[in-house]
Amino acid sequence: MRPLQSFNRRVPLGGCDRYLLALEDLMMRSGQGRHVGVTVLQVSPGFSLSKLRNAIARFASSQSLVGASLVQGVPGSVPKWVLGSPGQIEITQHEQDADWAPIARDLLKGNWPGSMRFDVIPVAGGGATVLMSWSHLVLDARGIELALAELAHLASHLDASPELDSWALPPRGAKGLRQRLKAVRPFLNRYWELREKRVLSLAEPPRRPSGMEFRVLHFSSEQTQRMKKRADCITAGIFALPWFLAAAMRAHGEVLQARGQVEGALECTISVQTRKRGTRGPIFQNQVSQLFFALPLGALGSLEDAARQLQTQFAEMTRNRCDEAFLVMIDWMRRMPSVFYRRFLRREASGQVASFYHAHTGEFLPGVQEFCGGEIADGWHVPSVPQPPGTGLFFSERAGRLSMSLCWRGGTLSEAEQDLMLRSIRADLLGGDDF
Amino acid sequence: MNFLPEDLERHLLTLVQEKLIEAGEPLTPDTDLFSIGLDSMGIMQLLIAIEEIFRVRIPESQVTRENFTSASSLAALVRQCAKGA
Image 1 (cartoon, rainbow over the protein chains, first blue to last red):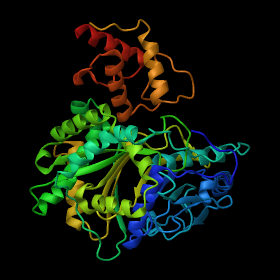
Image 2: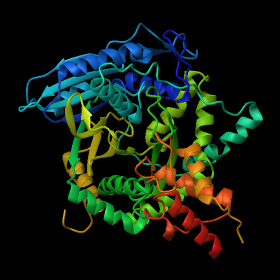
Image 3: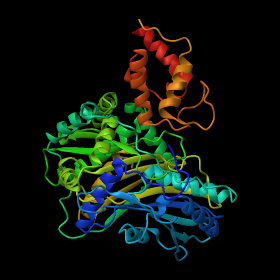
Image 4: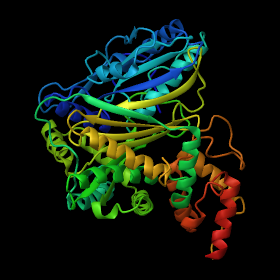
């Protein structure tokens, strides 16, 4: 990370910035609104709204990307970050004990200015439910937690100086056509492999604008322990990625098969962090690469089999440096005209490359116990998903308890299909009939 | 036959610190790697790096939480796998 020390320096365009701007542009054109998400924190008594206000004011005044926008100028030109004055972050206090879900559903429409906002719902007895809304153009899942960790730090240390401008310069990749072609080869090989499959998703492009819907499941400590013990038998309990991805694929497979689909494949693109583990930054911009996993419907027979196959793909892609190749690719592509992105994304977003969105973001806010005076009791993410593919399954864990958010665009899943998907996930993760 | 460095623990720690984890405090051979953020991607990168640098392939059955808990336990595993190679 190479943080800048003052405002109004030029923020370079990253490969992920360009990709996400094109994706958001497609979403806006089809009435899906901005690509945003909501992160929910349940904070125990002791929480202080004034501490949060103070921390947010200091945070916003030190981070120029809070008030920045990514602007596409003349059609065909390369977009650029336009930095305003130090940003403002809106905070709204709601009625005591108000239900967080309808508020989050409204926030997921993205009809609020800027890149972040906070909604606080006081809870009888002194605690609070805090909703942090974020724009995916500016923050990824890890960045959101780093921002929350920074706010928690500022709230606990009134004399602490905030980190300045926490964003990163793009990596110095391969130079020259020949070197670049060589570097992107593993990604292209994988991409063309996937293009040969008939990739399915649960939704076609929307005919009319549809809002985001979600259901969140919380598992107890005992249930989460059972899941981990069950995962021990196949991925040695330490490879969460293929295990949870297999469960998410099987849940989607169940719905497709219930719809009469017998042929085709499921593909899921998994974001992998490019930040080193344990760092406090960079907070802003999407600092990820991607790995592309796929299984035919016929290979989803059991969770164990599916997880084993995904584990093999995981090892192959890591060995082939597919993640590094993807980074070179998007870095190379960032100067290409929008029309190129639209063609690529339409293909990806038409159910030909992506079947659904999925992430297991691991421990939620690791190492942070207190937020603005109250102990963090629980936390989870509810991201919006573009349609197609129109669905997403997201996991995180706090204090040994797993949370899962099933997110979908209105009209993508019937109530019976939501139930089917959730039953499949619970049965797979918990095992047996006792769920 | 594989020739492993005598201070394999130190080599593994350097690998972890350079490529994977930025720890707030200095790591020791007994530092719990999971507690400082080792995850699925990190384990996979570590496995591949061990194959490439030390020419030792770790069988799937040996990829357990216990074996990957620290640089010490990992070094013991790498030595054991190298002997069996």
